[in-house]
Image 1 (cartoon, rainbow, N blue to C red):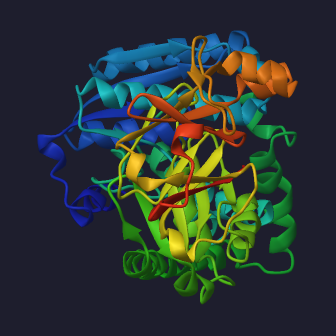
Image 2 (tube, rainbow, N blue to C red):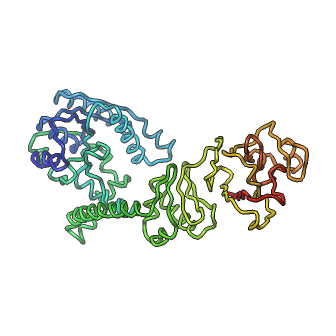
Image 3 (cartoon, helix red, strand yellow):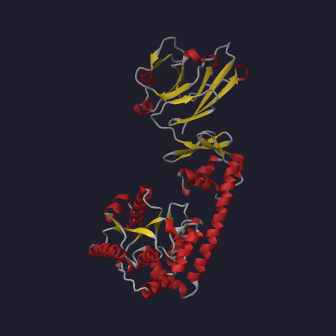
Length: 443
């Protein structure tokens, strides 16, 4: 066991004797064996224990046991207390999931402290078997079938050196070394998903397939290798079809259409916080009109002509500067498309969402912003200026519409109350040679 343990670090290219470790310790047999292996290997480490306050006196017993163990091993100990039940209720999580979230949030805090190199977790091969099965039934896809990551020095500094060791080997080692540990009474309760798989489902499957655990471990290894190859191929494909701009990602629709029946769309959008449930909506954009988009809290995927564009959403309170070369601008009211046309080839359009302006009067950069009190312009067809607020009254606009109206400026002059009326001073006339056409697409 000790040789296998130290070989793990050699395989991932880490010299453990030059590292500082945190060993997560519950008091159960798995983490006790992990701590013992670290001590026998001469590692520099300290223990970290979470008291989730879920089992009353038993939780306090575990903490006391771990404190005693730390003194025996002569290593430092860090302890944190959680009100797990309250956290689960506030965040609408199961107790198991709440404990997991709290635990890993703390690990992140420990990581960010910079006082150590790696966190060691005591997950073993039987945990991996159960995780792979649970992920299969949850429908988590190929990545889920790789189960628990073993960890590398490049990945989050979370390492699991016991992940290929069976639980029966851990028990044998503990008895051989005369180790003591505490039992978590909740481990026998099948109301928890993992315990149901451990105590009922897997034993039932073993009656039909006695080698099911060994077969699953073999499959995990296969799926892990397949997933690594898949990741590399997807990364190469994304590099080929995704064009990175300064502030966005542009994807030619014709190229993406070839892969619309694969997982490529998901693998592209997941990097921007989108989930699998939004893939069908993005697929619809491939056949949508320009200006349609799908969004989440931070990003939008926009159909713009022959492209899909992934970009950060514009802040609602923002003031947007528009340069002469820009052809498209997103904002909370939709999207503006800009085209410079010859007046001789112009087809006149009398639509509120289209502004036709004499290009010779336009000064750049244009400014797109929410209207404010005191704004005025010369509404098309009028020779006198009018306050925008008065214009709204004349148009009998609702408060909601008024609050969400934007204006477009050129040289500190309003040229368009967006989606409503252009300014008389910028209209096209018989001598106009070039026309700036602006098209508003609503969200």
